[in-house]
Length: 124
Figure 1 (tube, rainbow, N blue to C red):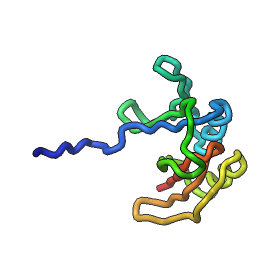
Figure 2 (cartoon, helix red, strand yellow):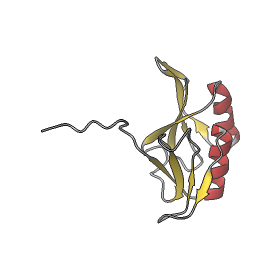
Figure 3 (spheres, rainbow, N blue to C red):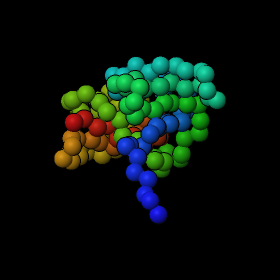
Figure 4 (cartoon, rainbow, N blue to C red):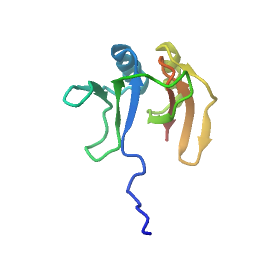
C-alpha cells in the first residue's frame, strides 16, 4: 500500500459557536485577526484571515460546541508577546487553563473560548 503524505496534515479548522457576534468579537480581539463573513456555503461563517489562499485557515460557524472543554483543541497563531493575548482571552470572556508551555517551535497556552471550545494560542 502506498501511503498518502499530504503537504499539510490539517487542511481546515471549524469552530462551532452558539453566538456568532460574540464569537467574532472574541476571536478578533484575542487574535488581533479580523474575520470575514461568508454566507455562500451551507452555513454562514466567519473566516480567519491568513497569509494567502494556500495557507491553512479556518472559520467560526453556528453550531453546537462539545461539552465545556472536552472537544478537539485547535491551535491558533497570535503575535508576541503571548502573555498579552492571554490577557485578552480573560478580558473577552474566555479562560486560560494552562501555564505558558515552551516547545522548540515557540510557546503556547491552552484556553477556552466563551463557548467552552478548547483552543491553544501559539506564538513563535
